[in-house]
Length: 266
Image 1 (tube, rainbow, N blue to C red):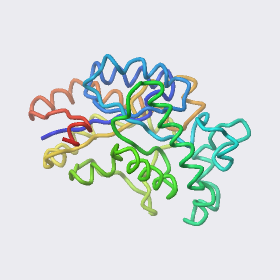
Image 2: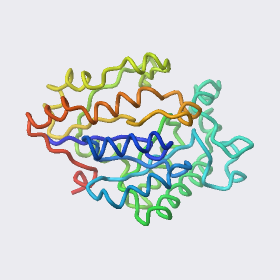
Image 3: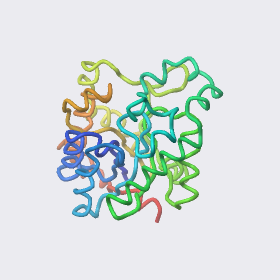
């Protein structure tokens, strides 16, 4: 069996960045997507060249931190300081409950301007194209359609597209009544999660696939992270899973091959 292990939000903060690097250097993480808009993105990029075995993609972020485009061109996406309106605010807006409302909140041309700017920032900082395109947090229709547009323009595949094409299996998410993956917002609840056991509990399912994927948000927690997102302490558990000797032994025992998105493209 081949296993694709992906960790999102590279460069979100210094703590997240170092947690992802440790999950690569001392663990099983082989794919991670850069937040090109964040101040710590430059730190994250500085680690790329020495790790050619890792697939560095881009996670398009329009709900946290500063924008890359001219804020005057994307007034529906940012506040008066040029920072993105948080997802926790977005989902409470009554308009978010309908497609018409979401399209009003996230005009597709504004999404394209910003996300193209993030794509160009990635190339400018790293000197290379991202290995894959990936979504982050909420997924209003204009945002997802923009990723698909960039997939067509750049020739770089969207993670959902390639996973579907290659029939990549994964551990099912717990979902709410509206079909959206459930999130644990309580910090104590996040810390109580056992990501190692979750993988072991789904071992038979994962091993039943020719190609399977494990995803998460590994990272270390710092003060900046606490001010930017409600997904905080859970990142410690994802990093723990990536570096767990138990998971490494499970991989060895079952002759599992760790792969990247580049391998899927082949």
